[in-house]
Image 1: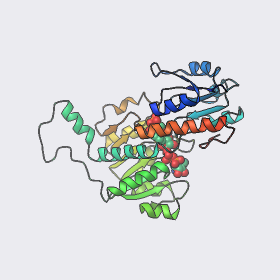
Image 2: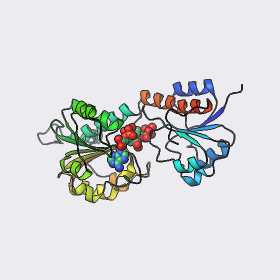
Image 3: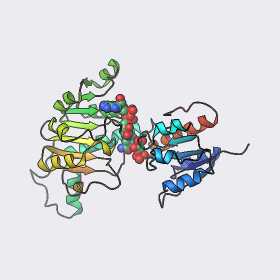
Image 4: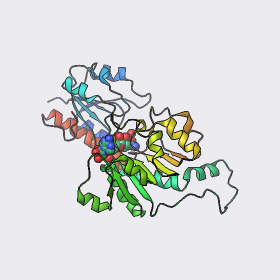
Length: 322
Ligand SMILES: NC(=O)C1=CN([C@@H]2O[C@H](COP(=O)(O)OP(=O)(O)OC[C@H]3O[C@@H](n4cnc5c(N)ncnc54)[C@H](O)[C@@H]3O)[C@@H](O)[C@H]2O)C=CC1
Ligand SMILES: O=C(O)C(=O)COP(=O)(O)O
């Protein structure tokens, strides 16, 4: 039997590419230049499934142009805010994601942002790289410790809980808000205090980590009013999605000192980011590094392929979204 043909919109790690090639006839788009939606739609005419990434934005207008032969899309990400699932359902397109490989890697980046923001790591790095370090001083780049501080986690899912586990290692006190309360054994595992409202969580969060997906309910929730409810001088980290944050309000609060620091891995409209961030000293900024660990990227590739394998076997996708 001839192999099914799949389009992979960006090259994946070698282990995932090898597995894909062993099973399928793979059309892999090079990463330079980035695939355009037009190119993706054109190539889609000659393949049986698409494995794409969060770079390929697929609102209804794009899904509606996907050729009839495509009934399977698998995304190399847990986030699926780039795909209109309702439009896919309407077209009978099955969609799956890669939900588990990212967890530890992204929680590590959240931990790194918490530490780097608290200890002013990027300011120190800049001081050395700009050859402007005058030598050790008692009051130079004095930050704060994490131990015995209250960490508020907004979205206590896989990454939120993996962050809680790591933050416990630094003796932080774990607080969370989620639309679903975690099981008692999960709360016990992290000694986590549940708050039944975002406001209640904000009122205690000396450190605040954003770990909820981008949805109509969460989009731009982190605005001036929310910031006002945090303790003075709170530190905020975001490893979820940039569009959970109102950038203008965040930047104003960082400028005024209402927020002491922000550690950000994701940005609305990335890779273009709000100009206001570039010159703010009290930010620790990463270019969407969350899942950028080889173990994570391999597993993400395998999970995305598991969906496609299941689809062609006539089974439900193991990581089914639609
Ligand atoms: N920076 C990066 O590279 C990465 C970013 N992400 C982002 O992190 C997000 C979280 O990932 P996981 O923890 O694996 O997902 P998850 O689905 O395990 O957890 C998300 C949690 O957020 C909660 N939630 C949903 N809506 C909420 C709301 N309105 N208010 C409060 N809580 C709400 C859910 O109930 C769930 O417990 C992903 O959706 C993705 O956007 C994920 C991987 C890598
Ligand atoms: O899985 C997700 O939602 C991600 O954000 C994956 O991010 P990445 O761009 O693979 O670091």
